[in-house]
Image (cartoon, rainbow over all chains, first blue to last red; front, side, top):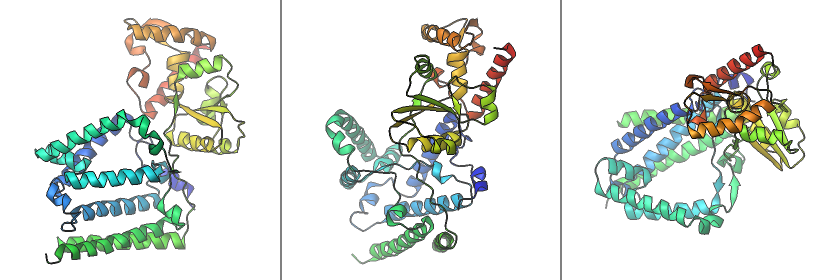
Length: 202
Length: 206
């Protein structure tokens, strides 16, 4: 049972507990954005061939970087909440819209494969002067404009299959900690398989 | 680098295994996911207008501590905490407006009321400070812009209706600010501003 005392200890999320006002949150967002971009660039994720290697199973850096980030955040969020330093119930959980998100995911994958870059890495590539990065950023902006222009037509799909704010552990019916352990095990197994695929002779 | 990766993997495995064991050996109450919809706000003048026309669907709740409520509160507002709100029956269609000076208390209250069917929940964005600055005690600077003058002219009758005192020609520094002037403030500043305004109203003796 969540201890009452731990509620009083919780200091994060900073914007929800009042430690950071809206203008401070904007400054923090810019700083985190730069930090994220720097990490992506240093991780080599500003290079389209490296990212496209993901789809040919020749270079699984994206999978490893993203899954590492996910596992780190998941374990950190779990333990910070458990120790009363993070009020997890105040963290915004986006709603799941199963069908439009599946369609969007497929479209995203096609765009990723064709362009060799995703939205974040295209900004990183553009910031480092790569012309393909600029091309993808412009294409992305055109896509955003098209989406807005055709939104009334797309709206039925956009709002379909609203499952609400659901978590994987709620769907499966296991405690959060068991979910953390399972996803971590899955990640480590995935890293081992990724390493073997990258090392196989071609 | 390989040994660093191996060490980090070991740390991750230990923490993940401990997480699984901790939740099995010492189960916790499942924390409900935060309400997915974004918070809907109402401005102080819009709230005042609804109170003045005696909107029967409107219910206003003050989620600040009881002492703060006793010192001053928005007319028609009832004091409540999240637990009270969860137990309160609200006949639909009800339009609930919440205000307070603590985001967590407000989030809990929004969740408690938002789970009821047929109930529309809105939050007075900058709470009592906004009410005092825009409705109860509006101020017009000595060098007003047309928009400021229009807002003051809209607020002055409301202020008198609620027993406040609208003042024109004050130094610009005395004009209340907030998100409506493009200067949203932190909870601490809002609470302090509200406390100062309430103190001056009480000194005036209503």
